Length: 388
Image (cartoon, rainbow, N blue to C red):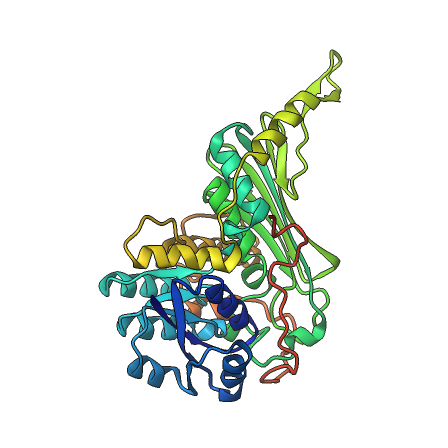
């Protein structure tokens, strides 16, 4: 039985708890800490956990022995809490984004290796519905060679979203919609097609006056193998839409899954190739999903790794790659130039103390709420995230 402790009792922590409870035969939550202890107590009672409650993570890490620690706190605390948990001989599952600088990411990865522990960063889309099937379809080769990938990470958040004191500041949140919301789709991009070699990007704040950071970004991506990509993310899209489309040499596939195949007529104009479409649909339908999806699926993989079993858990190095691409987007948008990857240790966008002063402050941040009365959070934001 894997013993689990949770640091942070904000909105996302409930998702972690429910994911652990979905596999209660393998794990048990023994402790929860939060600086607002009443939030931890409320979760404990709500889920009937009978866990020990702390108002201080340091004390919890000293007093309890857990096999796995879930960290569900704001981004600026991720590096220090992860390092402490790893040094206390705990494996760590960390909420996104991994940190607020590449330097922090590298320190966390090094600490995990030095202490022989697992560091995994939440990338639940890899374990979710159509995204999982898309990966398997590409891996099989039946869908063809990718030529162009288009990603929409289009969310809606009202101005109230940034009333929390730590949100909407480069120093405490690390970024805007590109880092906080599009990070899952950036992870998908790398998981599906690998890391691009060049980035050209633009960012702006169009509708959130209580935020220093961007609420809109557009990035063009270029690979040495000829693949091209485009990422659009925003917090101002009514109705929201998130999805991926990949044009290959054999057709178009993506999420939501609606395969299309064209073939040329004698004059070069297209006609639909229904037979090839049916072939793609059949291949897609033949792919079985893992028994647990989303956070629960990722946790199951982490537990396997802790037990020394074969696992494809999302590593700290993989999460770092997604974070690095975000930093390249920010560098390109700030310098108005194409940026090549990887970013070097000497780059201003490698360290927080040199990156933050270079970022545009779109508005003066005024909100300072410590929390909202409603703790509800929507994970994913799309009707086609889950698939049975």
